[in-house]
Image 1: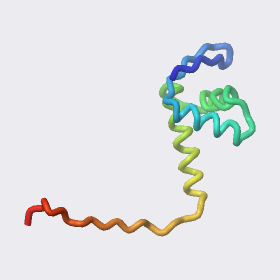
Image 2: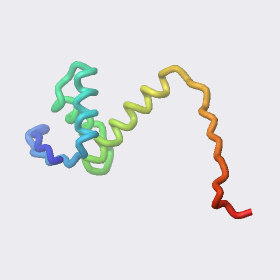
Image 3: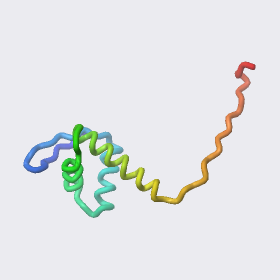
Image 4: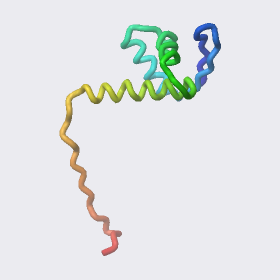
Length: 88
């Protein structure tokens, strides 16, 4: 999905998957800021790379922090059963 925004008097075209755009909107709402203000802050804080990539990394970092700050769960024990097709 393409999004056209004006940041500091400059037009930016951002290409984001729907899931990232939806997450970015959720983060903006949670932080009580506009989508444009959040995108401008991400743009101002990036050191390299394109804006679309910076947004994806911002969203990933935001949700990672949410997981790290939440309660820790015991690891899930995964057991693999042998298939009848396994070779002995």
